[in-house]
Amino acid sequence: MQTLKYLSIFAAAILLNSCLKTDFDEFETTTGSANFSKFVSVGDSYTQGLQDGGLHNEYGQQENSFPAIIAKQMGTPFVQPLVSGTGSGYMHLAYRNEKIEVIKAYNDDITDNDPEAIHYDPSYNYWADTTVTYNNLGVGGLNVRNVVSKNLTQALEYHTYLGTTHVSQGVLAWNGVGGQPISSYGRFLNFGNINNRIEYIDHVKSSNATFFTNWLGVNDAMSWAKSGGDAVSGSSEQTNPIEFREKYDTILAAFQKMGAQGVCANIHDFTKSPLFTTVTLEKVKKDIWIKEGADTTIIRKAVPEDLILLSASSLIAKGDGLTQANPLPHQQVLDKDEVIIARNHIQQLNAQIYAAAAAYGYPVVDMYAFMEKLNAGVTYDGIALTAVFIEGGAYSLDGLHTNSRGNALIANEFINVINASFGSTLRPAIVGNYRGITFP
Image (cartoon, rainbow, N blue to C red; front, side, top):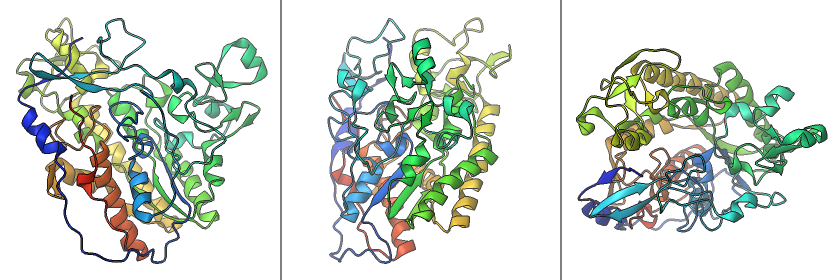
């Protein structure tokens, strides 16, 4: 299997794995006007702690989700549904022929998996106890439009039937397991059955939170973009801003009704993450042919404004995209017009987040601005971090999600806003104490 290859990377490895610390002045941690006794987080894969294209925890990756890091600084209990073994399967690095290679996770849908590709653990079929009350309610792949269904049709967009027998019985299923969502990342929550549906919003309502973080909304814009601007499934559609606001309000209304304090976060410009910025014409040094648009027959040479996805690197290595007769699949490229659409959609949804948060009186963490800083490069606890793939040290191998060290950066950004909004003095996490890229 062809993969991205990196030369002379060990110098970067030494830098990324160093644990430089900044000494903080001793001061008493106080809660201010905030009540952190029952801290709950809602969100998607960024909240859940997904890294390297999957849920795994062999080095505490999932345990070091950004809300778990916040909870540690709060000194409050925080229960997460954790995978075991290889979890859902994930990408990793291997050293071969004096080069570093990125090995993709095992894919059941292809026949040329790398011999070292990591498959999901058998325990992942039933990886969490749905009877436990969890503090981390992040679900990979969750859109705001999925948090509550207005009708049966909408409910089935996030669930699927299993066979005619189960249809007649009205059982919702994922991969043969009744009552589970299509996304296996949501298996730790009970979603009931077709006659007695349990919605995501119901889990929020029963959380009894005194304080929350809400970083929902990223997937409502990102799923379409990471599919090359192609709504290949219901999960990769762009959420309508009006529907987004209506359902985002249900989350904040639920928290407000239970008297919970908290903060929201807006959507960052994910088109500047390594998934979209690593494979460039300058680096490939060849003409790359692409299909423009999802439903057109236009085939042209890529220009610098087109964003070729990181996953296209293995296709290019095999010769795809090098001729007009064999262009890259549309799903592997966010073309220049689609980049504009994606970025405009981010702004539209962010406007709804700010409006909703203001209406309910909750502050907003500006993750858009923070990620722009990270893209330019930041130094934290003596460690230089950027959005460059692998060498930058903040992103995991999927090029979209931050690693544990990047999660500490995000946690500190939330902590800054929490302290400023509630008069608390939570200490920032020491970024150097968290793991960056895991090298072979």
